[in-house]
Image 1 (cartoon, rainbow, N blue to C red):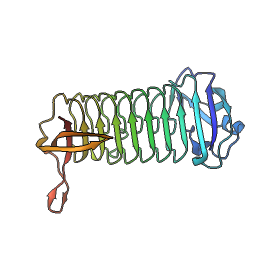
Image 2 (image 1 turned 180 degrees about the vertical axis):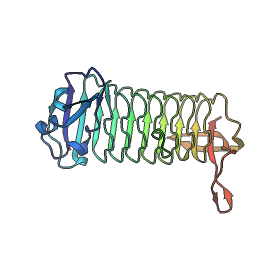
Image 3 (image 1 turned 120 degrees about the horizontal axis):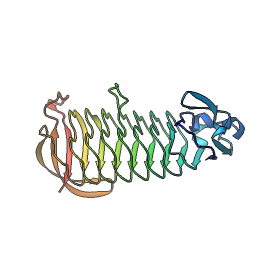
Length: 266
């Protein structure tokens, strides 16, 4: 795997749209060709080399290309958008939409990210060492398809509206989650190692939510049906099992309705 290192030397005054910073876009290109790739700052289009020094050439394919981003990337958005393979490492904080519509490969952010990261993600891995903002792994606004597949792992907390319209994949939050987890979910798994603020699983049709801490203000649309022992992300524990949202329509399998599941650790 070949490595391309981008070092931020001229931070943007506004926010920089980095959707062209992907292994797919860099594959088969020299450092000079990568530096000439277009990026947008507001309504102005400029070459990538205006903001970054570029070292190293891309691999022959996206799968053979690793990108390392250094310097202050807190105003850099959309890195890894729609990527299909390869690896991106951001050595600090990043802004919104990181890994949006991602289909494969791996993104590792060694800091915090803002909102809408992993938006409508279909595959691959998004690893965040810090905390995440709002709408993690959710659907784009006005769209009913959220996260379809892949893995998002956040070491810290996450904001509100995580996993809205989630259909597949897994989100693991090491800390607390704010309100509205898995609203309208029709599949997928969300694991919260801390507490959930409330309104968990609202209008949920299918899928699984595990909360290791407490849920503040549980929704009345979920009914306790028993206790189970399961291994979740390497931890074996007992959970209280709830099904719902009972106010929603639910598919039928083998003559029985299929519900969403919430598990809270005992």
